[in-house]
Length: 198
Image 1: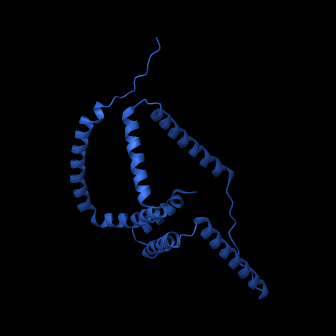
Image 2: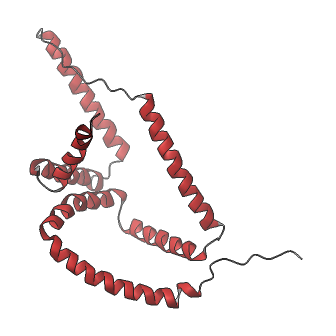
Image 3: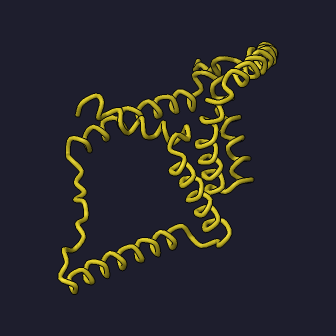
């Protein structure tokens, strides 16, 4: 695959996120909104909805193919989906490296090598728990999709103003974090002392 062919999917995604292909961007928002309404307001299980959609799709394709055969027309061709062994091996190797890194970090956190990181991880997990108790998974996914579609286009249009405001906010947060770091985190021990056997 040439470099220009490899950049095509990236350019397409950038065009959708920056609303250069506004009909597709709008379609993403409409589909996300309909999916959110179906999942949140109907209270149907996710597996049931997915099964029903796949069932309807398969029945429609079956009827379309048989209707074409009755009219002596060429049945519709479906693309052949094949996953190469090389691609599976590359994905598996990539995941193995990332999972090993995560496990190494988790091991360091749980055995208490660095108490500050442990404390920060506990705070982050607690915040995720609070957010998860307020919003469902589908609502968070919907909010994430809307933000993913709207923020890049808004940033491209108002980037200078946003950078100025974010610079002020960053300086204030850095100053407050420095105070908390000096008064709280630096008082926490880096390592939990282990009792030595006599």
